[in-house]
Length: 186
Length: 109
Image (cartoon, rainbow over all chains, first blue to last red):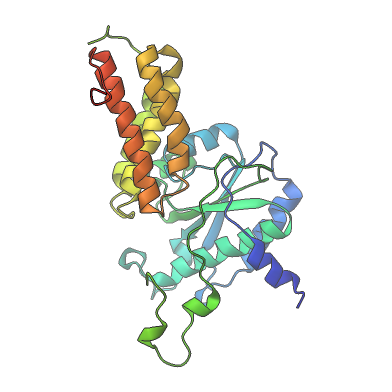
């Protein structure tokens, strides 16, 4: 079956090595609009997107972001603005609802980027207190994930060694859990 | 000990300090494996910063670090391969320390 949406999902990869070529404004706006269309709990739209393309700012961000190995020229921070929380969500209590919103937005934008021939890689390992200062973020505004965007290096130097492939059948149970179906390694 | 030198610029000091401090915060919630991974990243950045200014003995160590640490990042999910690279790096460290102290290595072979 030829289905471009499914094909896009299956062929997207996390990319760390990118070229210096900047993401065009046209593509950036398409990706951000896709992020806006991602679903949020109760449609409260708590996500806010902070785009950084300034090279000096990116250098500062990288210094306090040990998880960013990518040399991407564009960062999109998916943030949550607490002003948009419904009263039943408590960020301090690690309520998972807004994290699902953030994750869905990041994945939606990653797929949109891939459909445009762009590369992306998500990172959560960054220093929020330091980023608050660098990016002038108010306390109510928390970055949870950054999507690094750019053009993939045609011949990457360092590629993650593939582990044992898991097929969807390895991950799925039907109706009830059955121990003998457990995939090796859990 | 070799002659004391100053290798780092103020900006590099800030960069390394930022990395160490950021890791000290992030490792409170990150997987345990990230600890050694972040330390390797710090070692790699330090090696790149001082590479042109060090002695041949130290450069031999830095060559290994700059070549193998990026590879280590690609096998973090494979403990045996990851460990083999870290052991290799530490053997190079031992060689460097011994060379600087004028000691022979190689098990007397």
